[in-house]
Length: 426
View (cartoon, rainbow, N blue to C red):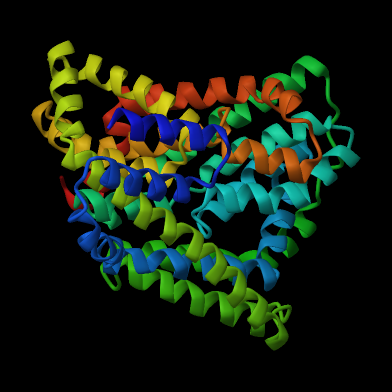
């Protein structure tokens, strides 16, 4: 087992794609442990890990995001954000965060948002006089809202892995997402006051009204999704299909920017991204199977229980552990591997599984911005044309406010559970 883990670390350092790292490590373990009979069931393990109705929401929400981006919905959400907050000191940075909040209610993926917004907001902010490092840092951090504000790919995977209600997880992510956005906005306000940024011209009431009318069809998409889930008209998975239909309808008939010729490239992008994610899920499940075979989850559980019987201290230890994991592993495989480890423990400590799921997903999402593996850092660095070391330094204050949000979410469960309890009475 130690040899397999050493190979795992070596492959990570060599920057081999994480899905291949997980699969190769598992196969090497099976061969070296002389458990060749496990190879017979390996294909079935790969298949069964994806055999879940809830996972169908992932490609559907990805398709909805592609349709919205090509159909002009993304552009109008950004324009609407400009009319609301563009006149404030540091206005374009506020626009960046607000636009990411809108997009988070559609896309559900931090890496997709960081990639999309790095292409649009970083050049625009630099043109307005913001440093490229600050622009990239703001964009990368605001992208963290993607997996927290529903719908969320991580919430779907956590719900499938833990048995928690995906709909309840969606609701539980609303307040933490708003809190994270407010913390980022607070940091921008502080930085703007310190550096004496100037505000831009305020939009007139007429311009605001015109922009609002143009964005109504775009806002209807997330609104119908949330209302439909809350009312029980459709499940979270069905809501993803509804989102695709709405995005198609709005792009074709309202904004008329979505063309038939765009559909093939949209489908190719969706399939490519879905294949990447599902390969990660399958390989992570295979790796988790190896850990379970060696009883690693039980050993970790026994060790953590031996350290404390206080739920507050336990949550602190979990957060420290997850932050370390997030530095070396992407969120999706880490989530699939860790959920079976922590599920029995949270029951023992009396922690609500929905509350813990939000902590887990938020923590691993922050890992996107922490070196050496942080995918969000590499995406923002590449697309914004900022050296990684400069971006890492610039993003420090944004990581600090993200950690503050994590602590508040961890030790204030009522914030997370308020909306679900309001609607479901539990």
